[in-house]
Length: 235
Image (cartoon, one colour):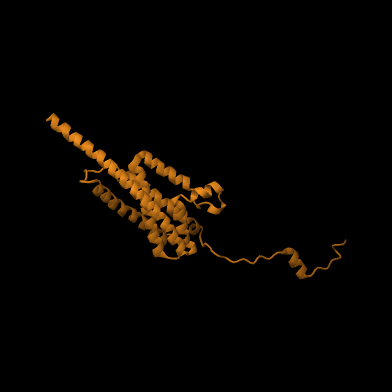
């Protein structure tokens, strides 16, 4: 009876229907879900591509023993660099022209893909040359660990404190963040910061790989000399 006595106006009805009106501003919009998910997928593709390459290209033993460890290391790096650059170009150009991912700078996207691929090459090269199949398993485990701790599924700020602290030391964190800035955010300064951190990984694992190559060269050289001595003794 009391409600029927009310005579609400259109303004009253509108107020009760929408008591709060939100005024929002779109900062970053994604026309397709792939644009938001691309940094994680491209990062994973580059790492897995390098890991798969280790099954095809021999890392641990040369076909013919080179004259020095430096020449062996330099030759191996030169060959693998060409393959790493090729896979980065294929993935980035396919993303741009076939999938038509919208990026702020196509050139920056391609060059950053090449740099990420080279960084992952040094990491996988060190693990495989050091431990063979065990190193490949370690590289795979290293990739799996990073899937949920580097901002791929959830923003790093939403992760537990332990995982946030761990993500600082993982290369996927910086490759994914770099791709995010190139594809959606357009922050050049952040991209350069990620390149700088990835350079630390690149230089560190390049040095470690060089040390392993030197040690393996000495071992292979001793084995070859022993085989030659055994052959001469048999003759």
